[in-house]
Figure 1 (cartoon, one colour):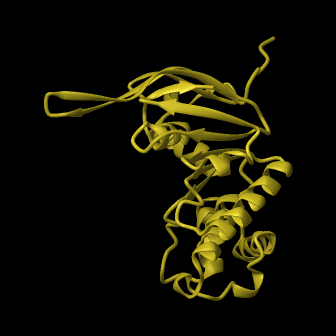
Figure 2 (figure 1 turned 90 degrees about the vertical axis):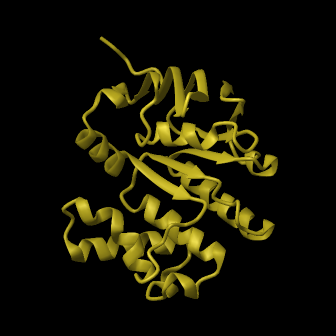
Amino acid sequence: MNQVEHLIEIHDISKNYESGDTSINAIKNMNFYIDDGEFITIMGQSGSGKSTLLSVLGALNHPSFGKVLIDSMDLYNLSTEQRADFRSEYIGFIFQSFQLVPYLTVIENVEIPMAVTGIKKKNQREMAMDVLKIVGLEQKSDRLPDQLSGGEQERVAIARAIVNKPPLILADEPTGNLDSNTATGIMELLKSLNKDGHTIIMVTHNQKMSEYASRTINIVDGEAFA
């Protein structure tokens, strides 16, 4: 009987981008694993391949070579539709630029990932309010994004990422645009979500932020050192 050893297994993945006659190796022969319940930071200089790696892990960016196994599923052997279903059920994304819809209220932004789930509208509203309580923004549910501070917008982005209760959260520089006090608050929130059972993979170039993680994977010139 096969037993899943690790939640995520990366086997010899590479990602090349073609530009004219030039081939750029964004990721080179990476091999590593991540276990269920870990809080991992991916660290490296700008342009080292961190965000490319995160997009590959998030089933958004087909590697040129190699395998990405999550819960023993070979992500890039799935059809495009199966990968989309996998993302909506399994992964919560948190972006540095928040990516909130400016004309939707806070609670409407949080409800977006539930649009494809078939959950009744009334239940969607209740679930969205529940996660807004977790991030401390239930009193601002009817505000528009531009009526919030940067830290509050990031909290909305986190609420949106966790509303479907995904086991895996991928965060791309979630504190990159925030002052240090606000960044600390966001990291404490992520740490608490990790304690509640979410596996978190966070890209950062800030050594201080990596201190919240259980383990760091360093990316240097497209290569991973776990």
